[in-house]
Each structure stands twice: as C-alpha cells, then as structure tokens.
Image 1: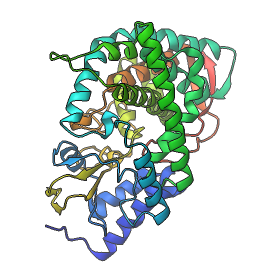
Image 2: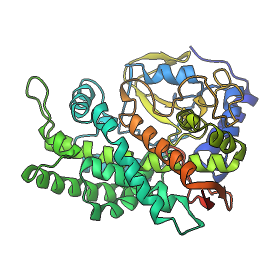
Image 3: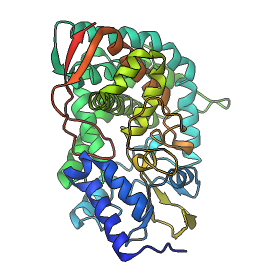
Length: 422
C-alpha cells in the first residue's frame, strides 16, 4: 500500500525534511518545518523505500512494532537521497574494525536486547534512581554556590553541563578527576547518529569511541579489584536467576551508553528548558506563583523542545507501517520532535504552556528501547528548576541562544543569562 500525496505537497515535505536534517535554518526552527510535514505529508516515503513518520500515533506504533529493529549498518543515514561512496566505505571499515565489540543495548534487538537490558535493569533500579534525589540536590547546590557572585554567565557552562556529568559520574563510579575529558569525547561520538554527519565527523567519532572503550575497560578492572557502591560495580556483580552475567564487552558498552546518555541529553534538556522560559517569561511568572507546577513544566519542555528529536528503525521483516508496505531493510525515521508537535494530539503545539495536560511526550521513545534513564533526567531538570526559583528572583536571556548544528540530539551552543539573587 502507498499513500497518495500531491507533487506539490511532496516537494514541500521533502524540502522541510532536508532543512530539518541539514541546514542551520532547520536546526534553529524545526517546529515550523514539523508543521509543514503534518500538513503536507505526515507519512513521507523516500525514493529508497524509507518512511518518515511525524504523527504521534504513527511514531509510537512504529517504536512498539517488533518487526522493526536496530541496525548499525544504516545508523545516521539520511532518509532521502543516498550516502556518498566515501561514507559507505568508511562505515564498512568501521563496522569491520569494531565487529568484535558488542553493541550497546541501544543497538540490540531481541533476544539479545531483552537479556542485556534485563541484566542492566537489575542494577539500574528505580530505587537506586530515587535514592539519588537528595544527592542531586546537593550537587546542584554546589553549582549554584559556585555562581553565587556572578550576575551574567553561560548557564550551560555553569550548570547544565557540570550537574549532569557530576550526577552520572558519581552514579556510574567514574572518578571526579576524569569527568572533564568526557565532554569532548561524548560530543564527538554523538555526531555519529546525526543524519548529516560528515566523513571527518564520523572518523572523529570512531576515534573517540576507541578512547572511551579503553577507558572503561581499565575502569572495570579497577572496580573488579576494589568494588564500590556505584552502578559499574553493581553491573559487574549482577546476574539473573540462572547465573547469566554481562560479558566484559557488554559491561563496557553498557557503561559507555549510560554515561554518555546520562549527561549529553540532560545537558540539552536543562539548556532548552532555561531558553524556553527566557523566551516565554510569562510562564516563569506563573511558575513562581505556582511552584507545584515544576513537574508539569519539565514534561512540557520535554514536549516543546525535546533534547532528542528523532530515532531510527530498520524493517526486519515485511511490515505495513503507517499505511505503507515496507520491505526488509527499509529505514523508518520516527520524528519524535514532530510527534511532540502533532496538532491532532496537542492543542496549539507551538505554544509553551506549563499547565498543559495532554499526555506524555514522545521524547524518551516508546517500546523496548524506552529510555532507561528517563526518571533520572526528569529528576535533574526538576531539581534545577526548583533551584533557579529558590536562588534567583529573575533569570533572563542576555541574547537569543544559538542552536548547535545538530538535530538528533538537539540543544544550544551556549545559554547566556543575567540573574538577580532572591
């Protein structure tokens, strides 16, 4: 089955998609392009048979469909057009070079995914996350204390980066003196999942991954010799009822993905949150008068400007997806950011409204790959928002923040603010 779309609407949708994936204009204002997709072609089929989904219902169904799965061979490809011969050759070389390394659970399909995620979940429990709440407050207070004498600063540098890296560093068990080096390494690896990744960026990502892999191999050996009260030590010891345990490679892959995802996306979440309030000051006025709205405000920023804007799947067996008949190997792009702006689900989706109550956003995905650290990210954002309300009588943008030139993991290069102490 195919979906009829006029030539004019098809061209509008293709242009909007290209701008979202590969232009500064699209990075800076994806929401207006999402509106074009919703109007012109909410289900868009590429010339290569791939599908791009922008409706909430379609994205959710695709992410829950076990006929769709993960594939490292096609991760990061543009769903329109074809990768260059240089990119294809590089991906082939990198896949060959890393063939002996297990994939992280983010790139696994059942039954491997079921097994690895089940073991990781035995260590990374809701109870462990809940127990971190008071410590997150303590770490946040350290950040606020460090900026106490400042009136103008970059909130990313002062808070949005140091807090998440501190939280995940202590949770996983990475020594404090090593935290700083991870920023550039994780940023480099994150480029590999961008639709418009370049050959040099992909090469740098591979080199960064080599360094991360060796670092965690060494750290795991340290934890084996001297276990501590941290997540990495718990992962080393965890087993299921039959005595199954994570292999050395699975431990490394799990540690890398938890550490990287634990601060890259949360840094963006905090930066996006402060920017949204800076651009919509009336919402901050409402929040100050009604601080019990903090959890609702965090859910709204996750919807309004998600730190993760898209996720990809590959068809593992013939399937009908959102009305399209797709063959094995076809790519399915779920536009999470567009799903969060679906006008059939959200009233006035381009309006930032901390009192919105229209269901959970798609920001953490859905199905078997739903983000394991969702509650931790929520807790950090809530603690930051509570701290900003308590410490400052006002938080204003000194200039409009500039977007990073990325869309899969979406955030700002800097968030310059001016504050007044409470």
